Image (spheres, rainbow, N blue to C red):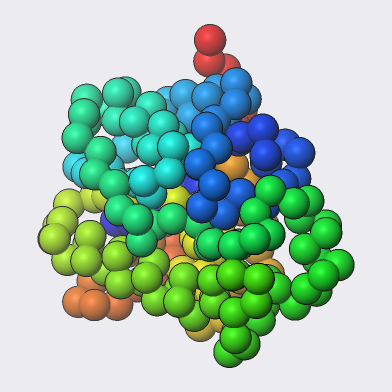
Length: 199
């Protein structure tokens, strides 16, 4: 089983600013969400934890790891958010005005240094396949980012969900099985753990 999780909230999330590869930490709400996520996984089998190398994803992953007794959280650059180039730090609504098709522009050339959707999807799919091939029969939790996870959901569902359709919530969990090279989505965008009280 692969549990694919979006990181907790950051101040830039709250302000609706484009983060991309900009390394923004969790805010207090994001840290609380990570603790709630850890409570969710307290009694769920997880053998390995991986994360994007950006701080917001790594901190979320380590919070779950502490609860599970997994101290070795391996990071991969290929699990990063989509790079938004010179647009990082601007309001998301401004990007929507400048490039209204930015979230669904499959097959188009890069503008303003924004990573093409195909490139993001390819690196996510390759990295997640490598992780699951190495893990074999083990259950894995991976913390990544909204647009990156959505591109993988788009890949698995052949465009029926994910990019351009789904808005992933902070720390929402989407799960997949991986058997003999084939993916199947089991649950999607589950944030029910955010109702768990934590101190």
